[in-house]
Image 1 (cartoon, rainbow, N blue to C red):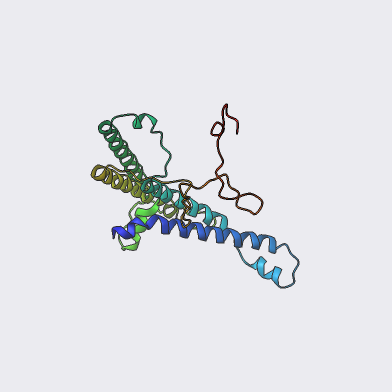
Image 2 (cartoon, one colour; image 1 turned 90 degrees about the horizontal axis):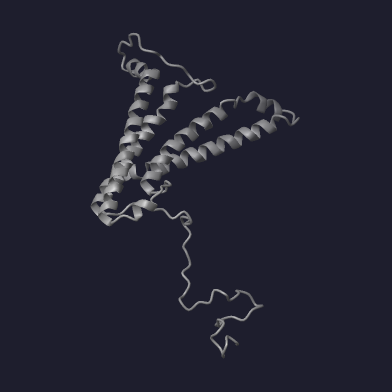
Length: 231
């Protein structure tokens, strides 16, 4: 179960990004294609209603951002100012790192709880009771989105779900740091799937890889030949 959870963010973000890109592409092609006077095709395109595309992609990007934040906690790609922390001794640094991770877990847990309360009051509680055939009483049914006409509590569910996942990731990183003393790091210059070429120690980076320049020559520095720096 934990292995599946470890890749939850990647799968969800990949799906949302790919689907949103495809929907926007189709919507743009539909918009411009509808303006072309092509018999039959123009009428068919005009009969298609893609007015919901923009609203759906906005919702998808909101969900992508919330789960992307949890991914950032797990992989260590969030920006942090740690100049002062790194100047402390190892023991004090470890304490402040644990405090910082605990504060992150506390904050995201509070945001998740507040978000859950908002979602329940915005129609989710009413919907859950309806599904189970229970009396809804005076509960609020909740509004819907303008174009898709989805219950807005579905859209807002990204707040508690994403925040609780961030809270879990903070706790996960904190436990791993206490056990191993290591934090997740991310090389912003590394591209996944591309192996870096390790040059040999004696390689001369000044050599040009073409047929116009001499190869395998050692370029001496000033002062290595003769007296007074003359070569």
